Length: 294
Image 1 (cartoon, rainbow, N blue to C red):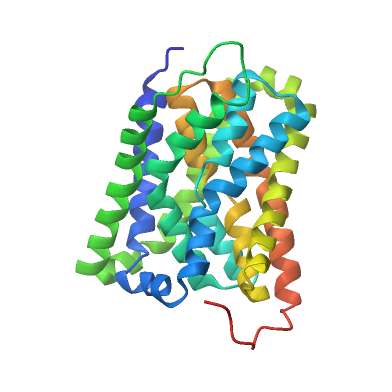
Image 2 (cartoon, one colour):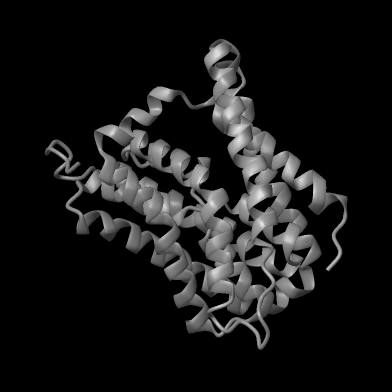
């Protein structure tokens, strides 16, 4: 599969710019929550690369998807959470501080864990009769360059020029949303015929994957005795993926078809995310004032 300048250069560059903006919204003090409630941060961050891949496994087996579409489901399941999940947690009146920590840690862990998850699951789900060629080292390098470095530079700018970082925060959020829409348009444009053909199968598959993530995220918190507010946060953080990253990786290393599940997932996650956020905001947890587990 040969890719053009768009997949090789423009999408990764624009995503790096988005991650730089995310970094400018972070401070070292934001990571204190890791020390205050380490188990919550660990379950939300590490668990993110366990629960959504499990959801991907269930979906692939339940729907019988194969080839590029199945690989796309796995890529969606291996993405970290993104800035959108933080916004939804804010709207849901959940634990925003915990959400920021989980998003940041899962994003920083992504360069190592995402290639490993895609490689392991891609070659152990029987997607095709021959091994799935996953360029693990190249994926690691790309994701490191477009995530870890920009976020670090963004945090440096925030530390040295906090007024500037605050001033550009809103424009950056707008740019992030526009970029997501741009990637969705690109993916659908390259897959329009495939989109129309596969929507009856891929659409329900993405709905199922998102719903499984919401449920497993919530009850993973209950399993460890966290408060309802923290369980709601985990639910959103686990199920709302950084699909912009997933679609970029899919189009860079695999095929436009493998980016299609991410585009459909992106559209659906806003439906469930906004619906849940609205409902939870109007129905605060009864144990909100109770001490929370560490």
